Image 1: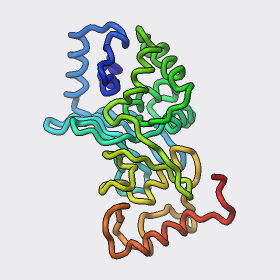
Image 2: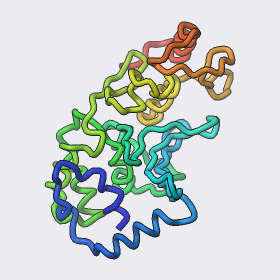
Image 3: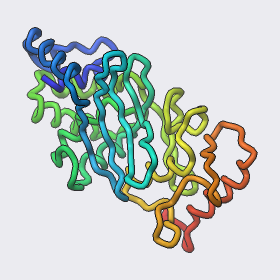
Image 4: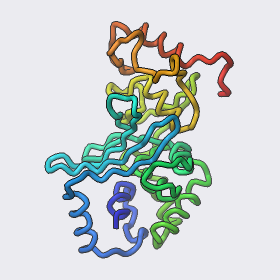
Length: 261
């Protein structure tokens, strides 16, 4: 019953719920009440490269209900939002290639290592206007094998066409290999005022693609600021230290040999 509620955000554009299959309405409501009324916040974790972890958090406080998709590393002071669904959707968090890469990375330490379950868990955070031809077949197989969906092929096609609250987004890769998108409400769109700081964009992009984007300094974790600066300028925000920050970030991402992209 969990999937009925979790994937509801993906069933947009008039997609019939019957394609997902038949369900017990009263049982679903009872399960939903237990999920949102528990003493603890349900958290589902998917490990990423470089020690990062992507958490799907069900916020169930009395006046603060929603689903957060956050990324964290033990050396970070706090987690960073990638997407959130609490009546005011923010996202998307992932391109199709990143979604599949995370689902298939095989890294231990998460809630589950099953690729299909991971893909469905992160599916509401998808937003990609250029999904490959085989995406529908992969998603349909997940819906059939894990949910026993009544119409897996048609449901997969509809989900990929509408792509939940965020809708399709265009992704691009810069000269340093950092992937960003153009979503108006995306934390990974550097044009947005509350986008992730540049270094976090690079770290998240690298972890999602299993590619090292930042060099550690003397074996220590890379921090988000030049020479101890505590400011973390956003890509569209004004900052008196913007030039220093940009130079510092460029130095971190430089390689002795050009990266293969």
